[in-house]
Length: 198
Image 1 (spheres, rainbow, N blue to C red):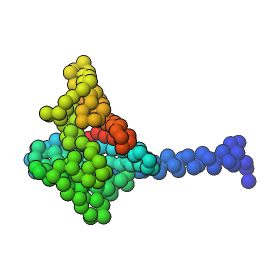
Image 2 (cartoon, helix red, strand yellow):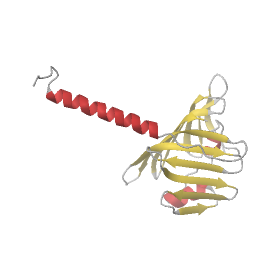
Image 3 (cartoon, rainbow, N blue to C red):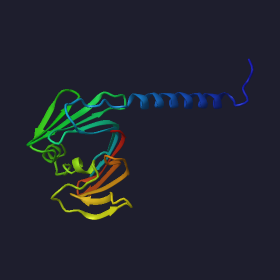
Image 4 (cartoon, rainbow, N blue to C red):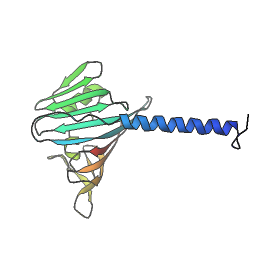
């Protein structure tokens, strides 16, 4: 049997690399989230998310996958999916209510997204501003610090509600890259949304 000039170990490593690359490509192809159906005009975004949490005196937590966002001005719905495309969690926000539905069917409800997250995490973590940040604007009525803008006057960085918000890669609807960082007495929190469609 002829021996390859790469050597058997090199061939094995190359084969593993090819298999891993094909698997990663397959997962990436499956990761596209489904658009959320609804009536009438709405602000819609589809893409990928990544979360990295480092709570004080606890193990770090990281997750990534796809997201689908639909906001008709009255009701916001955000679906988070695994890299394979199955729904990980569904969040719905309307006047006076916020609901989280997990993949196992369990639900949490609160009066606002901020109240909902505080109930889940055990300490305040204001996130209501995300609804505006996704459009490239600060949350109305809340102080804004360190605002920076690009040549077109679009916000690229600011601090609000304890978050460092960075926005970039704008299209005609808003930023296609939203990066959030927060550090408080409870730990460090990093979230990123990369818009692929919308």
